[in-house]
Image (tube, rainbow, N blue to C red; front, side, top):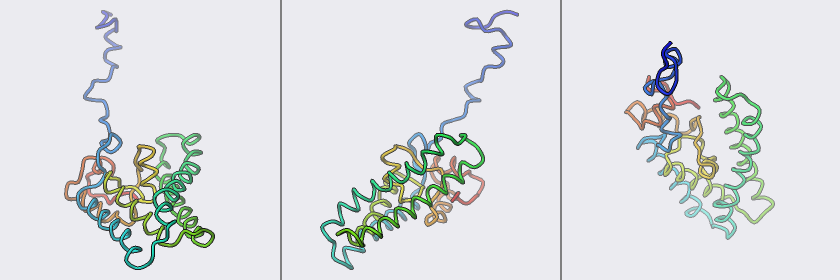
Length: 200
């Protein structure tokens, strides 16, 4: 059999994958936005509201701002890494349970971070306003980056330079509307364009 270019035989050349057959990168993982203008606006409004709420209704303690911007984000990153590390190390990639595990990890992180934050208001000078500020700023970070994942992981995703494959329970209906109206390519590739509601 006559050799092809660079010494490959015809049979070997036929087995090579053409560039058009290669999977295109996911725009979301490549840095594209996962949410459209409606989802972005909803998160921005929610973030501003949660940030302004403690300022308007209660006194902000000196410890609240560093807790909201430093302590709670670090706790969220640490808890997420602690729960996700075993799955990333031992679980097979791309199996049918990947999305379910991610959803379970995110919900667990949300519950643990919220529990730690509430507990801290009883044993430290941190007040409840720090919790509202943390979630508000997290929503603003998610809106700025275009993340569709759980807002409690906004800082963890920012620090790790990645995005979640699961959506946010609160904003899932809004994101679904965005996709139906022709949202960003990252959202369509992540959710599909056949009219499915976003994965939770």
